[in-house]
Image: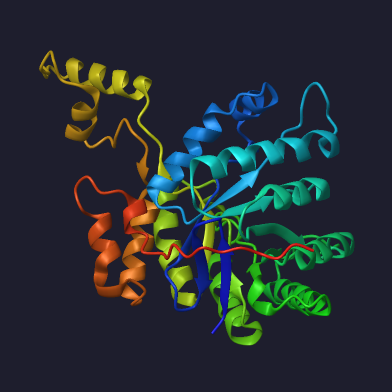
Length: 351
Protein backbone atom coordinates (compact mmCIF):
# COMPACT_ATOMS: atom_id res chain seq x y z
CA UNK A 1 0.00 0.00 0.00
CA UNK A 2 1.30 3.46 -0.94
CA UNK A 3 2.70 5.39 2.01
CA UNK A 4 4.45 8.75 1.72
CA UNK A 5 6.49 9.46 4.85
CA UNK A 6 7.22 13.06 5.89
CA UNK A 7 9.26 13.67 9.03
CA UNK A 8 10.48 16.35 11.38
CA UNK A 9 13.20 15.63 13.90
CA UNK A 10 10.71 13.97 16.25
CA UNK A 11 7.39 13.45 14.43
CA UNK A 12 6.15 11.55 11.40
CA UNK A 13 3.20 12.31 9.14
CA UNK A 14 2.11 9.57 6.74
CA UNK A 15 0.05 10.08 3.61
CA UNK A 16 -1.68 6.88 2.58
CA UNK A 17 -4.91 5.34 1.34
CA UNK A 18 -5.54 3.75 4.73
CA UNK A 19 -4.23 6.65 6.82
CA UNK A 20 -6.08 9.62 8.36
CA UNK A 21 -6.33 12.54 5.95
CA UNK A 22 -3.19 14.70 6.14
CA UNK A 23 -3.68 18.45 6.61
CA UNK A 24 -0.89 20.67 5.29
CA UNK A 25 -1.24 24.14 6.80
CA UNK A 26 -0.93 26.90 4.17
CA UNK A 27 -0.81 30.08 6.24
CA UNK A 28 2.94 30.74 6.24
CA UNK A 29 2.85 32.24 2.78
CA UNK A 30 3.08 35.98 1.97
CA UNK A 31 1.29 35.62 -1.39
CA UNK A 32 -1.70 37.96 -1.26
CA UNK A 33 -0.87 38.99 2.31
CA UNK A 34 0.63 42.47 2.08
CA UNK A 35 1.01 42.87 5.84
CA UNK A 36 2.96 39.62 6.18
CA UNK A 37 5.12 40.45 3.17
CA UNK A 38 6.02 43.84 4.65
CA UNK A 39 6.81 42.25 8.01
CA UNK A 40 9.11 39.68 6.45
CA UNK A 41 11.01 42.29 4.47
CA UNK A 42 11.47 44.22 7.73
CA UNK A 43 12.72 41.12 9.55
CA UNK A 44 9.57 40.85 11.68
CA UNK A 45 8.53 37.20 12.11
CA UNK A 46 5.77 37.72 14.69
CA UNK A 47 2.94 36.74 12.31
CA UNK A 48 4.88 33.66 11.19
CA UNK A 49 5.17 32.61 14.84
CA UNK A 50 1.44 33.11 15.45
CA UNK A 51 0.47 31.27 12.26
CA UNK A 52 2.75 28.32 13.02
CA UNK A 53 1.39 27.85 16.53
CA UNK A 54 -2.26 28.42 15.57
CA UNK A 55 -2.15 25.94 12.68
CA UNK A 56 -0.62 23.16 14.76
CA UNK A 57 -3.12 23.83 17.55
CA UNK A 58 -5.91 23.60 14.97
CA UNK A 59 -4.66 20.18 13.85
CA UNK A 60 -2.24 20.70 10.95
CA UNK A 61 -0.05 17.63 10.42
CA UNK A 62 2.50 19.43 8.21
CA UNK A 63 3.27 23.13 7.78
CA UNK A 64 3.92 24.59 4.33
CA UNK A 65 6.71 27.18 4.35
CA UNK A 66 6.71 29.73 1.53
CA UNK A 67 9.10 32.69 1.57
CA UNK A 68 7.99 34.22 -1.73
CA UNK A 69 8.30 37.90 -0.87
CA UNK A 70 9.29 40.37 -3.58
CA UNK A 71 11.28 42.93 -1.62
CA UNK A 72 10.80 46.60 -2.45
CA UNK A 73 14.47 47.10 -1.66
CA UNK A 74 15.59 44.21 -3.88
CA UNK A 75 13.14 42.74 -6.41
CA UNK A 76 15.39 39.74 -7.22
CA UNK A 77 13.94 36.70 -5.38
CA UNK A 78 16.94 34.58 -6.35
CA UNK A 79 18.97 36.70 -3.94
CA UNK A 80 16.43 37.41 -1.20
CA UNK A 81 14.33 34.27 -0.97
CA UNK A 82 16.96 31.60 -0.09
CA UNK A 83 18.18 33.30 3.13
CA UNK A 84 14.61 34.19 4.10
CA UNK A 85 13.55 30.57 3.58
CA UNK A 86 16.38 29.43 5.85
CA UNK A 87 15.37 31.89 8.56
CA UNK A 88 11.69 30.91 8.47
CA UNK A 89 12.42 27.16 8.50
CA UNK A 90 14.77 27.53 11.47
CA UNK A 91 12.24 29.68 13.32
CA UNK A 92 9.25 27.41 12.71
CA UNK A 93 10.96 24.16 13.59
CA UNK A 94 12.14 25.81 16.80
CA UNK A 95 8.49 26.53 17.70
CA UNK A 96 6.62 23.39 16.60
CA UNK A 97 7.55 19.77 16.06
CA UNK A 98 5.45 18.85 13.01
CA UNK A 99 7.13 18.11 9.65
CA UNK A 100 7.55 20.87 7.07
CA UNK A 101 6.73 21.34 3.40
CA UNK A 102 9.32 23.48 1.58
CA UNK A 103 7.43 25.56 -0.98
CA UNK A 104 9.05 27.78 -3.60
CA UNK A 105 9.36 28.51 -7.31
CA UNK A 106 12.96 29.63 -6.75
CA UNK A 107 15.38 26.69 -7.11
CA UNK A 108 17.94 28.06 -4.66
CA UNK A 109 15.22 28.62 -2.06
CA UNK A 110 14.10 25.00 -2.36
CA UNK A 111 17.61 23.78 -1.64
CA UNK A 112 18.09 26.30 1.17
CA UNK A 113 14.91 24.98 2.80
CA UNK A 114 16.01 21.37 2.39
CA UNK A 115 19.37 22.13 3.96
CA UNK A 116 17.78 23.85 6.95
CA UNK A 117 14.93 21.39 7.56
CA UNK A 118 15.37 18.61 10.05
CA UNK A 119 14.01 15.15 9.29
CA UNK A 120 12.44 14.46 5.90
CA UNK A 121 10.40 17.40 4.59
CA UNK A 122 7.99 17.41 1.67
CA UNK A 123 9.17 19.45 -1.33
CA UNK A 124 6.65 21.69 -3.10
CA UNK A 125 6.86 21.37 -6.05
CA UNK A 126 7.73 19.89 -9.44
CA UNK A 127 5.65 20.33 -12.59
CA UNK A 128 5.78 18.72 -16.03
CA UNK A 129 7.72 21.71 -17.39
CA UNK A 130 11.07 20.53 -18.70
CA UNK A 131 13.25 23.04 -16.87
CA UNK A 132 11.47 22.29 -13.60
CA UNK A 133 11.85 18.53 -14.06
CA UNK A 134 15.54 18.92 -14.83
CA UNK A 135 16.23 20.88 -11.66
CA UNK A 136 13.79 19.56 -9.06
CA UNK A 137 13.99 15.80 -9.64
CA UNK A 138 17.77 15.62 -9.04
CA UNK A 139 17.20 17.67 -5.89
CA UNK A 140 14.51 15.23 -4.71
CA UNK A 141 16.87 12.32 -5.33
CA UNK A 142 19.82 14.07 -3.68
CA UNK A 143 17.97 14.74 -0.42
CA UNK A 144 15.74 11.62 -0.56
CA UNK A 145 12.53 13.54 0.06
CA UNK A 146 8.97 13.23 -1.25
CA UNK A 147 7.70 15.84 -3.69
CA UNK A 148 4.41 17.44 -4.73
CA UNK A 149 3.88 16.99 -8.49
CA UNK A 150 1.55 19.57 -10.05
CA UNK A 151 -0.28 18.48 -13.20
CA UNK A 152 0.69 21.26 -15.58
CA UNK A 153 3.49 21.46 -18.12
CA UNK A 154 4.98 23.79 -20.73
CA UNK A 155 1.56 24.14 -22.38
CA UNK A 156 0.03 25.52 -19.16
CA UNK A 157 -2.93 24.22 -17.15
CA UNK A 158 -5.32 22.17 -19.24
CA UNK A 159 -9.07 22.08 -18.58
CA UNK A 160 -9.02 18.51 -19.93
CA UNK A 161 -8.64 16.04 -17.03
CA UNK A 162 -7.11 13.45 -19.35
CA UNK A 163 -4.31 15.87 -20.18
CA UNK A 164 -3.70 16.58 -16.49
CA UNK A 165 -3.54 12.83 -15.82
CA UNK A 166 -1.03 12.43 -18.65
CA UNK A 167 1.19 15.14 -17.15
CA UNK A 168 1.09 13.42 -13.75
CA UNK A 169 2.02 10.10 -15.38
CA UNK A 170 4.91 11.79 -17.19
CA UNK A 171 6.26 13.19 -13.91
CA UNK A 172 6.01 9.80 -12.17
CA UNK A 173 7.84 8.12 -15.06
CA UNK A 174 10.56 10.78 -15.20
CA UNK A 175 11.00 10.54 -11.43
CA UNK A 176 11.57 6.80 -11.75
CA UNK A 177 14.54 7.57 -14.01
CA UNK A 178 16.12 9.26 -10.98
CA UNK A 179 15.32 6.36 -8.67
CA UNK A 180 12.41 8.21 -7.06
CA UNK A 181 9.60 5.75 -6.23
CA UNK A 182 5.94 6.49 -6.97
CA UNK A 183 5.17 6.46 -3.25
CA UNK A 184 7.29 9.60 -2.86
CA UNK A 185 5.27 11.48 -5.50
CA UNK A 186 2.21 13.36 -4.18
CA UNK A 187 0.20 14.51 -7.18
CA UNK A 188 -1.78 17.73 -7.19
CA UNK A 189 -4.33 17.20 -10.00
CA UNK A 190 -5.21 20.91 -9.92
CA UNK A 191 -8.63 21.79 -8.56
CA UNK A 192 -10.47 24.29 -10.75
CA UNK A 193 -12.99 26.79 -9.31
CA UNK A 194 -16.50 25.36 -9.47
CA UNK A 195 -17.79 28.89 -10.15
CA UNK A 196 -15.84 28.99 -13.42
CA UNK A 197 -16.22 25.32 -14.43
CA UNK A 198 -19.39 23.48 -13.39
CA UNK A 199 -17.70 20.08 -13.81
CA UNK A 200 -14.66 20.95 -11.68
CA UNK A 201 -15.76 18.84 -8.72
CA UNK A 202 -16.62 15.78 -10.81
CA UNK A 203 -13.36 16.17 -12.73
CA UNK A 204 -11.13 16.14 -9.70
CA UNK A 205 -12.93 13.18 -8.10
CA UNK A 206 -12.48 11.15 -11.29
CA UNK A 207 -8.84 12.24 -11.57
CA UNK A 208 -8.05 11.28 -7.99
CA UNK A 209 -9.52 7.81 -8.52
CA UNK A 210 -7.40 7.32 -11.65
CA UNK A 211 -4.26 8.55 -9.92
CA UNK A 212 -4.82 6.11 -7.10
CA UNK A 213 -5.82 3.11 -9.21
CA UNK A 214 -3.52 3.54 -12.23
CA UNK A 215 -0.44 5.26 -10.81
CA UNK A 216 -0.70 4.26 -7.13
CA UNK A 217 0.21 7.75 -5.90
CA UNK A 218 -0.98 9.88 -3.03
CA UNK A 219 -2.68 13.15 -3.85
CA UNK A 220 -3.11 16.68 -2.54
CA UNK A 221 -4.72 19.93 -3.65
CA UNK A 222 -5.23 23.56 -2.80
CA UNK A 223 -8.57 22.86 -1.13
CA UNK A 224 -10.00 26.39 -1.23
CA UNK A 225 -9.59 26.67 -5.02
CA UNK A 226 -12.87 24.82 -5.50
CA UNK A 227 -14.92 27.62 -3.88
CA UNK A 228 -13.05 30.63 -5.28
CA UNK A 229 -15.34 33.54 -6.10
CA UNK A 230 -18.47 32.06 -4.54
CA UNK A 231 -20.45 32.96 -1.40
CA UNK A 232 -20.21 30.81 1.73
CA UNK A 233 -16.91 29.28 0.66
CA UNK A 234 -16.62 27.29 3.89
CA UNK A 235 -19.88 25.52 3.09
CA UNK A 236 -18.53 24.41 -0.30
CA UNK A 237 -15.15 23.44 1.15
CA UNK A 238 -16.84 21.41 3.89
CA UNK A 239 -18.69 19.36 1.26
CA UNK A 240 -15.74 19.09 -1.13
CA UNK A 241 -13.14 17.73 1.29
CA UNK A 242 -15.04 14.61 2.45
CA UNK A 243 -16.09 13.91 -1.16
CA UNK A 244 -12.47 14.20 -2.30
CA UNK A 245 -11.44 11.91 0.55
CA UNK A 246 -14.05 9.41 -0.57
CA UNK A 247 -12.56 9.48 -4.07
CA UNK A 248 -9.13 8.70 -2.61
CA UNK A 249 -7.48 12.06 -1.97
CA UNK A 250 -5.05 11.70 0.93
CA UNK A 251 -4.07 15.28 1.82
CA UNK A 252 -4.82 18.94 1.20
CA UNK A 253 -2.94 22.20 1.44
CA UNK A 254 -5.38 24.38 3.35
CA UNK A 255 -6.02 26.76 6.22
CA UNK A 256 -6.99 24.70 9.28
CA UNK A 257 -7.69 27.78 11.39
CA UNK A 258 -10.92 29.72 11.80
CA UNK A 259 -9.59 33.24 12.24
CA UNK A 260 -10.66 35.16 15.35
CA UNK A 261 -13.50 37.66 15.27
CA UNK A 262 -12.11 41.18 14.97
CA UNK A 263 -12.85 44.05 17.32
CA UNK A 264 -14.55 45.85 14.44
CA UNK A 265 -17.03 42.97 13.97
CA UNK A 266 -17.69 42.87 17.72
CA UNK A 267 -18.33 46.62 17.81
CA UNK A 268 -20.69 46.41 14.81
CA UNK A 269 -22.67 43.59 16.43
CA UNK A 270 -22.93 45.43 19.74
CA UNK A 271 -24.20 48.52 17.95
CA UNK A 272 -26.79 46.41 16.13
CA UNK A 273 -27.96 44.87 19.41
CA UNK A 274 -28.17 48.20 21.18
CA UNK A 275 -30.16 49.64 18.25
CA UNK A 276 -32.63 46.80 18.73
CA UNK A 277 -33.13 47.88 22.35
CA UNK A 278 -31.32 44.92 23.90
CA UNK A 279 -29.37 45.80 27.05
CA UNK A 280 -26.17 43.84 27.58
CA UNK A 281 -24.50 43.30 30.97
CA UNK A 282 -21.94 46.02 31.52
CA UNK A 283 -19.23 43.52 32.44
CA UNK A 284 -19.71 41.07 29.56
CA UNK A 285 -16.36 40.11 28.04
CA UNK A 286 -15.77 39.77 24.30
CA UNK A 287 -15.42 35.97 24.26
CA UNK A 288 -18.69 35.49 26.14
CA UNK A 289 -20.37 38.01 23.83
CA UNK A 290 -19.32 36.38 20.56
CA UNK A 291 -20.16 32.92 21.89
CA UNK A 292 -23.60 34.07 23.06
CA UNK A 293 -24.45 35.49 19.64
CA UNK A 294 -22.91 32.65 17.61
CA UNK A 295 -20.19 34.78 16.06
CA UNK A 296 -17.32 32.37 16.64
CA UNK A 297 -14.43 33.18 18.94
CA UNK A 298 -11.94 35.91 19.72
CA UNK A 299 -9.21 33.26 19.56
CA UNK A 300 -7.94 31.14 16.64
CA UNK A 301 -9.65 27.76 16.62
CA UNK A 302 -10.07 24.82 14.23
CA UNK A 303 -12.12 25.75 11.18
CA UNK A 304 -15.26 23.96 10.05
CA UNK A 305 -13.19 22.23 7.37
CA UNK A 306 -11.26 20.47 10.14
CA UNK A 307 -14.54 19.26 11.63
CA UNK A 308 -15.55 17.82 8.23
CA UNK A 309 -12.19 16.08 7.85
CA UNK A 310 -12.33 14.55 11.34
CA UNK A 311 -15.85 13.30 10.72
CA UNK A 312 -14.84 11.80 7.36
CA UNK A 313 -11.85 10.06 8.98
CA UNK A 314 -14.27 8.49 11.44
CA UNK A 315 -16.71 7.41 8.72
CA UNK A 316 -13.96 5.84 6.59
CA UNK A 317 -12.55 3.86 9.53
CA UNK A 318 -9.36 5.94 9.65
CA UNK A 319 -9.97 6.94 13.27
CA UNK A 320 -9.32 4.00 15.58
CA UNK A 321 -12.23 3.57 18.02
CA UNK A 322 -13.31 7.17 17.25
CA UNK A 323 -10.60 8.48 19.57
CA UNK A 324 -9.62 11.46 17.41
CA UNK A 325 -13.27 12.50 16.91
CA UNK A 326 -13.97 12.30 20.64
CA UNK A 327 -10.82 14.28 21.47
CA UNK A 328 -11.66 16.88 18.81
CA UNK A 329 -15.08 17.47 20.39
CA UNK A 330 -13.97 17.38 24.00
CA UNK A 331 -14.48 20.73 25.78
CA UNK A 332 -11.14 22.46 26.19
CA UNK A 333 -9.39 19.97 23.92
CA UNK A 334 -7.37 21.03 20.90
CA UNK A 335 -7.41 19.63 17.39
CA UNK A 336 -3.74 18.83 17.81
CA UNK A 337 -4.72 16.38 20.58
CA UNK A 338 -7.11 14.74 18.13
CA UNK A 339 -4.55 14.09 15.42
CA UNK A 340 -3.80 10.52 16.36
CA UNK A 341 -0.55 10.48 14.38
CA UNK A 342 2.64 8.83 15.46
CA UNK A 343 5.64 10.50 17.00
CA UNK A 344 8.34 8.30 15.54
CA UNK A 345 11.79 9.76 15.28
CA UNK A 346 12.95 10.03 11.71
CA UNK A 347 15.81 11.21 9.62
CA UNK A 348 17.02 11.22 6.06
CA UNK A 349 20.24 10.58 4.28
CA UNK A 350 22.08 13.49 2.75
CA UNK A 351 24.16 13.15 -0.36
